[in-house]
Length: 238
Image 1 (cartoon, rainbow, N blue to C red):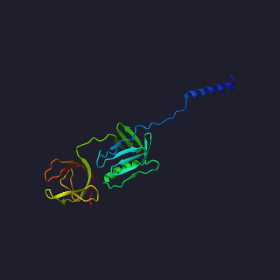
Image 2: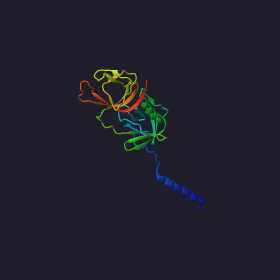
Image 3: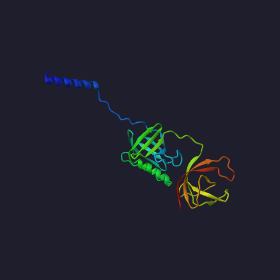
Image 4: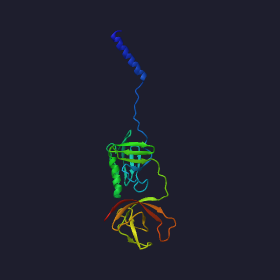
């Protein structure tokens, strides 16, 4: 066979194969499970921090289109994000994360700063059933749950500041009550009763995470609520 004939035949075969193969198909990279349209509750960290599921000190992450919002552990945060497969970047396209400037107890600010610092770098999305973890390059991680927290009748979590001095009040044996407030600088209020599990020391100011329970039919000289200590967030001597 003449050499030119062999070349022409080869070209014809190649053209035929290309025609059989049809048009080139677009190759798409799987984005993995969807993260939009649900509230992700922070339920754990690799550092072992105690994370309340709701109330004071809790955090919820939500995604909507190209924006995210993070509520807690102290402030409100929002900004853009970009996702590529299992990698996510918060504050995408040079957009910064905007945050409120609420004053919070030191321990909560440390937790919040740690999470925001991690969100300034690319993070890996790890899915496990209803859970989503944000994993940093150094292995630090924050675990979120997409399931709604089950309602509980066991009380409500609060963060309160306790004064280093008791004050005269009525309805309490001895006439001296603990003083508390919900925000730094707010007026002190009287707590008619003690905080279960809490050992108060004169001259020391505390920031506590407590659980408040209602008391059905309390005596006339007693409080209609009961407080139980969950965590001492901060202590200082003014």
